[in-house]
Length: 523
Image (cartoon, rainbow, N blue to C red; front, top):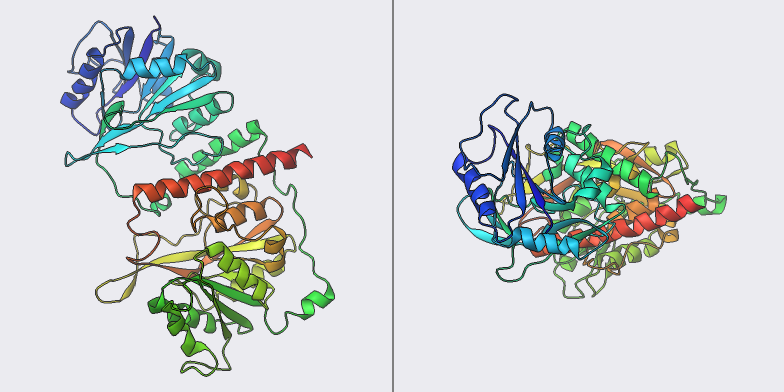
């Protein structure tokens, strides 16, 4: 009968009181699997008394002087005598085990000879007592995001942890991220899915609404640790790209360059039913300091899309038409496929460069000028990515106000040396994105929702990945773009189904990127 060593932490800063900590222990005592022990890594100091919780012969109190969470867990591992180790991330969430949690997770691990870790769906209990089931995603090699939810209870064969040497003590924040990356390199991670009443444990914590900008508020020191963890993982996995590796130059013949004298950049705007925003977007292009640009609006709602009426005033003969301003061109499609719209716009473009603009956003007046200066600095640069501010439109007044709590989004985690590797752990590279149109077309263009789970999502992220594997990515660190949040936006009030679908899409893109990079390294 295999033994399970459960490891939990205890300190003065838990997100709950001793009574709830005691409930966690009671739920262990009530397990229908009896061969277990609990090691409590008490981070209050080496000479502290046992906490005021249930005493039991299977509980080992392990007081220690806190250095890092990785150090605490490693100290606890030294006291484990089990064949399997269950790490419980109970720092902020109080965990209640169900009667068969240990037995079920143990049996999952035991029936798979290649098992490195078992994780499971759980039930989240909010601060208001409301409960909801959390269904996690199955693991694969593209699950490189540092924010991917694996739950709070992880079971490992003891031999796997021993071979890895425990947790990496150099990390203060990336210890668990690094651990599951290292485990995944030589073992499989098994996910226990739950149907009705099938969750394996309850996690009581304050539920927080999903915010696509949460990552911006993470400290720089945390970001650097996470970057180090993913970089080392890619090196061990054969998917790391060294600085300057596999870069090519963007080349044009004299005849090609002659074509761009009248129009240097084409701003392509794919849009569906955004009449109230499209005028602002168009006018932001026409206000550019460089006027040899054009606007290509690709309406994808068919001939009855209301956006068309918002574009017509800017066309020849319209009330807002000005022959001295950048031309506006209209293309009407009836399939809502963003990748197709972007590819179609570039096939019709007269410019040398594509510039991104979403229909509900706007460019700063010097956006194109600053983007082109970076392109001119190095022929190896095929794409330039800018920085942006986040604004919000008041649904009642229509007023657009800068969201001061969100700093200018520079994505300064991107570095010349390692940006394209670090990109595999985060969900975005910044905006606006601009690129040589010929290079985009050589790379196959934007995705057409032909990547699994992709529904008008991530086609730009995939393009950045593919471009970065062969060319330099230039940066503009000044804000040159305004992202405008509003009730109808794609990042407003996202439900969990949409979040999971989006994560699945980008993780699939990461998986494909890893395969491409390994192929590059085999050349």
